[in-house]
Length: 147
Image (cartoon, helix red, strand yellow):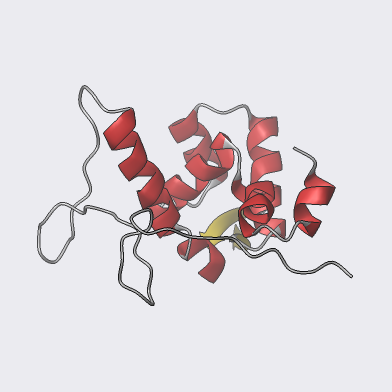
């Protein structure tokens, strides 16, 4: 993927993929939503090489989805916390999960439940204006004029 051109693209999907379009970044955000904050926690959960994890955490921090906070001075240690942008990524994770459950299901899958009601969460994407489930109505894309 051409990162420079993706940043300049009028397509918000393309721009978003430059930030969180690889599997490791998405899984780091999943784990951050599950409460993991420290480098070793992410490394243990994901089985990712330390150099790869360092790069992904740096990118997610630079792009504003995570923020670093020092939790120990001696030795110096930092943790990674979700920002507003990172917290707003949760519905995206659930939509990816819903697609995976439908098309990559089979066997035992993790389930997610509403902590207050105890009901299983069934994610769908709905247009806020029309209330229609996205994908059930015709759509068109309007690309901004260049100039």
